[in-house]
Structure formats: C-alpha cells, structure tokens
Image 1 (cartoon, rainbow, N blue to C red):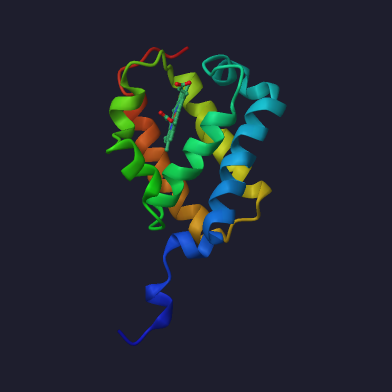
Image 2: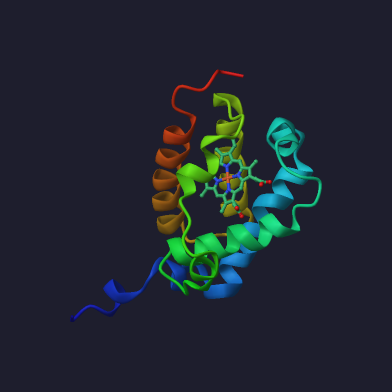
Length: 134
Ligand code: HEM
C-alpha cells in the first residue's frame, strides 16, 4: 500500500461516529421539517429517536466503521427490514430526497455524497420495485 488516501474509509471521510450521527440527525430533521416528506413521515412512529440511533448505527457499519450496532442485533438485513412496509414509489423518492437534503445540510464531501447517492438510490429502487406509484 503506497497511497494513504486509498486506506481512508468512507466512515473516516464523513467524520467518524460524530459524522454518522450528524447525517442520521440531519435526515430525520429534514423529514420532520419539510412538508415535501409528509407521506414518508407518516410511515414512521411519532418518536423518531430510536430511528436516529439506528440509522447512525447502520451508517457506521455500512461506511466501514465500528460494527457494534450490527453485532448487538445479531445481524440485520436492510432489504428484509423494509420488505413488509407499505412503501410506494412516491415515499421511496421522498426518502432519497430527504437523504440528499441531509447530505447537503452537513456539507458532506462531494465525492462521498455522490457515491452514497448512487448506492442508496440503487437500494431504494430495489426496495420500491413492484410497489404502487403512490
Ligand atoms: C435506501 C436506503 C435505506 C436505508 C439505508 C434505510 C435504513 C433504515 C434503517 C437503518 C432503519 C432502522 C431499522 C431498525 O432499527 O430496525 C430504517 C427504518 C425505517 N425505514 Fe428505512 N432505509 C432506506 C430506505 C427506506 C425507504 C425507501 C423507506 C420508505 C419509503 C423507508 C422507510 C423506513 C421506515 C418507515 C422505517 C421505520 C420502521 C419502524 O418504525 O419500525 N426506508 N430504515
């Protein structure tokens, strides 16, 4: 390994534990604040605090950081977790818009934001495949 940049994980690029927490908080803040995401907000419980913790834990694992969140749960499949939700193309699109807003709000490095946008878009598309439009 000669290039130190190659060894930098996305988790480090986002700012470690504090960075994933900021992203999760910015995501749910956007969902609570922006009426454009009302249908997505309605799918969630009134108290978003457990989801804030959980999304931060997910991002930690997904971006190559500590895996405690996953280990505590004894594993987790993001697709199965969402499979039984009443998702529509519209709410899936709202999820993507809200995460984009969150990435802008925390001034995520552009290169990382672009990569995450691509990967999350694929996931959201797969989750919403075959669901009704609205
Ligand atoms: C595309 C990437 C996505 C990621 C990475 C993601 C991630 C997560 C995570 C980590 C949780 C917490 C799960 C738990 O603690 O058990 C969660 C919950 C949730 N997600 Fe997603 N999600 C995604 C897409 C979506 C989409 C497209 C929707 C809806 C259209 C959605 C709706 C929800 C809802 C409603 C919950 C809360 C479930 C509950 O209250 O029990 N998610 N998501």
